[in-house]
Image 1 (tube, rainbow over the protein chains, first blue to last red):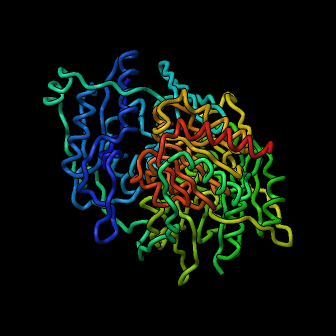
Image 2: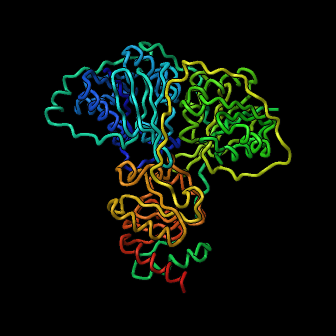
Image 3: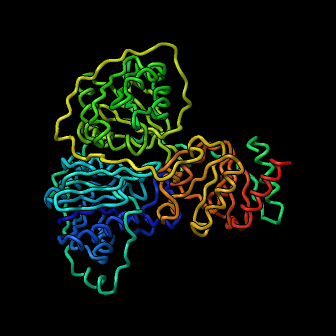
Length: 252
Length: 320
């Protein structure tokens, strides 16, 4: 089974984000492989261990995004593909999906695994776009995958439980963090990753040109700030204070 | 006059409240049409009509319930070709975004996700999109034809409008090629006592709770207050509690009378889902945690001691 996992380099979720002077989120932060993608890579590796095949990581980003791919390779993925081109900086979801789709098409995978959403944007729009552009069905919000030859079955997380969703391969699956606990890269894995191939593609290689984006940012304003409240050390009276607030809010 | 198409989300025949929020807003933007698909669409259409839809396009083909995303995408795309609305509004929910994403790729129009408001402007539309945890709001002009905008649940209050819409059968055949991701079973694991989105009081726990073994402390407080328990993405991802409890940009948006954040630092992904709560109380070890800056009352201390004491005090007050 050939599996493509889409991966993204994001600002470390454990660091505090800051804004640049132009109100964009600073990209100069510590960057890591998206923790959601780590779960997807882990699941792909487990599927490969059970069924054989190959795990290919596909990403789009600046040159340094190779570090994120390398992290996945050190976990055990076989090779990587990075679409990197200055003209694609600031790409919107559709442009990103188009570039990824072009690179993935060349791989003809049986499965494409994506995190349900990235840690930085958290909008989850690229996977359904990617499925459409690749002409694949999408089995989404999976917390469990059973692959069986030419069919897949997932448990799709819902508000009060899950749905069982079945389909034939090739298919695109989005996974939640519940899918698998990512393994730590072994020293051997880290060493091996150094010599694994990361193919680099330009916008021209994937036949993508930046067109008109879906939106034009006309301005940025501060949201109505909440009035700063009272902060108290718990000296034994905090509970009484909370009870007062609950009573004032008429919920008690 | 601008024409607005609202994608009404049905969950096993039940109309999502978010769809009525969209209807209420859409009336300010122009002439409103709606599309409702799957079992229960006709009943939903009557409700949509009472909320300002001039025409409701319905199709009750079982394929919309039995298969994910693709049949719905086909139907909306077919209606778009026929009616050419200027803008299509979707709720920013896990089901709707899957249809919106496919549609935006198929029509080549792109989309704007995670909006909290939309206004008509200069013959077009400008979406307000919160980011940086809701501290900043970007105004984004929609360039797509059609414009496709996904709006966060709870962004607008629902109100009815006198009149009834005209229900029209949407003529569309779903090809077998779109019947691929088939729902073969639905399993209910947990029934919520009080729905998180509807609760007057929400008590959410984060990493500061120490582990899943301590979440019953929050359940007890919630039960004393008649509220519901939520969680941050960090603890959902860590597997402490199910995704259904996640409050944040993804997960649920809540707007209760009182929101109590326990052991939650206030990461942006979380605050955007709760910052419009009327009163926010934070309990955290760290006086510098971002949540303290937005709380009406911030208590610096040990949550595992404060929460049980608070539960006892609430019970005492209720009984006294």
